[in-house]
Structures are given as C-alpha cells and as structure tokens.
Image 1 (cartoon, helix red, strand yellow):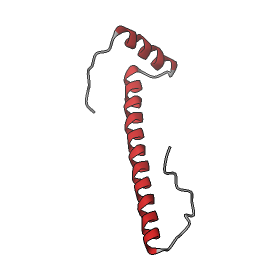
Image 2 (cartoon, helix red, strand yellow):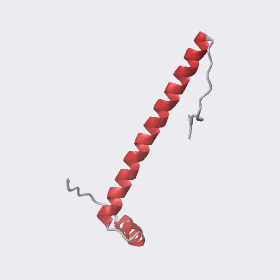
Image 3 (cartoon, helix red, strand yellow):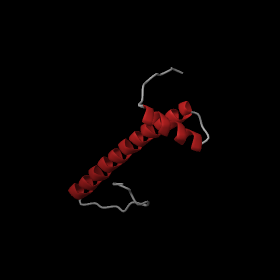
Length: 79
C-alpha cells in the first residue's frame, strides 16, 4: 500500500473530520472509500457505455438482416 499526502483548506479539514466521525471511520478510511466509489462509478459508466454500444450494434445487425429478436431481460442503456 502506498502513502499519499495532500493539503486541504481548514474548512475542508473540519468537514472531512466531521463526516468521517459521523461514519465512525478514520479520515484515511474515508478517503479510501471515496476513491473506491469514484473508481467503481467510473467502471460502471464504462460498462453501461459498452452495453449501449453493443445494444446498438445488435439492433443495426438485426435491421440489416431483417431478423429480430427480443431480449429475455430488459437492457438498461441509459442511467
């Protein structure tokens, strides 16, 4: 695990301390959770983007071939 150091304003430090305390976690754990949330959200957005691309490709192939199928499960293409 790597150590990171950064600076925040006193106002942010106070808010960060209060938020971490309200969650009953350390400031370091609070930042780890924020980073994990950001990375997970980014991965989810890429997954949705790729699913949307695949959905559009399938639709264009079906249209070109004149063959249509119905998905068994609804496809979420936008959030």
